[in-house]
Every structure is written in structure tokens, then in C-alpha cells.
Amino acid sequence: MLKFIKGPMESIEGVAIYPIISLLIFFIFFAALFWWVVTAKRDYIKEVSNLPLDTNQNEDYK
Image 1 (cartoon, rainbow, N blue to C red):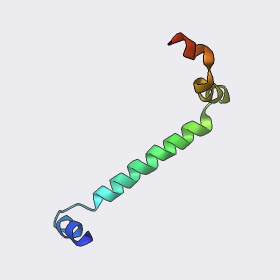
Image 2 (cartoon, helix red, strand yellow):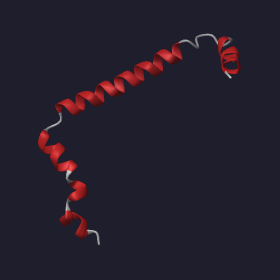
Image 3 (cartoon, rainbow, N blue to C red):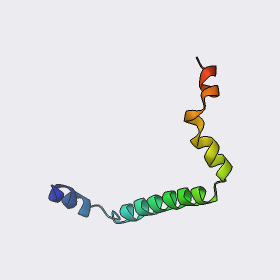
């Protein structure tokens, strides 16, 4: 299966940049997500985590 992918990809010039770009996007996204989690306020995290259990808000939509 790999030979069907590898063969045509070798004929494209500059194809080696795509794995590097995808790795950078992956790393930047998860680094930003980690930074957001570390710097998020505990009150906000508690409020959002209790949303599914909040019965007062669920009664408004019935």
C-alpha cells in the first residue's frame, strides 16, 4: 500500500514541506490548548463543568 503513495509523492518537488507544516500546526494547536488550560481560572472551570448538572437552567428550556 505504501508503494502506491510513496511513488507519486516522490515525483512532486517540495513535498517534504507538508509533513513539517502539519507537525507545526499540530504542535502549535496543542501548545496553545495546554497554555489555555494552565491559565484558565478555576471559577470558570467549575462553572463550565457544572453546566450539565445545573437543573435550574435545564427547566427553562422545557
